[in-house]
Length: 316
Image: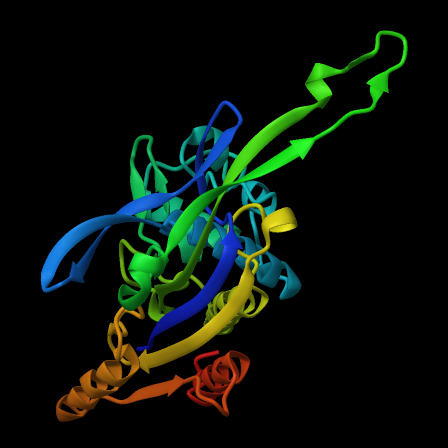
């Protein structure tokens, strides 16, 4: 058994990674209520945030690329980055026809046809309904507690201009506009978990659906998708013109035999607390692996160590 948990801290200055709505010419950044302590009292403030849905979408886009690189199956919708999954007959019929009445056969067919739905789960909302939980979990990215009061989202003014029409002495109104985009700045933290044992295994019968070598390849694709997402910073919206200035500042990773989640990076001392919690596992005779960034160890080196450890265990 093997469960991976990753805690990430990253700095993002002037980012528009998660926008929620547009009102006229004003586009708003996602904000969430957040508890902080000030002068010995708790109070609620609103801070910029990046939703777990946004991070999960980016992860699955990377998973598509890794799966295709390794010649693993990806369905038509997921290949396009449209993660409808097998939500109804219209989408399921692209994978299997006729559709069986046995939920176990439906799940098995979907798992075989698409790595993304194997790893990321799906909900077939027809008769019979079939639900497969995602093997990965991701939190919102939130400002760390000690700096939450300094996290901010402010509108930036932008303008688009068109040349004047010489015949009418007027500019084309549709080609000229002033608009505002809220940009956030914060030191964010989030947690990503991956249950490697759930990949290629039926959520209904708990039995493997695929062969051992196929499952190992899918586990590797799932790991590489996460690591490429982190090392490339390719997640969130508006990267073409609002690519955030910053990057990963700290990274911790634990690999355990049973589900264990690292302490959230939004708290100070999260790395040390995670280590202490892992030490308790020794009293249960449970094996684990733990690594983190330092002055001498880059995030990519941490990720490489994790891959090497899991490969040594012959899990990929």
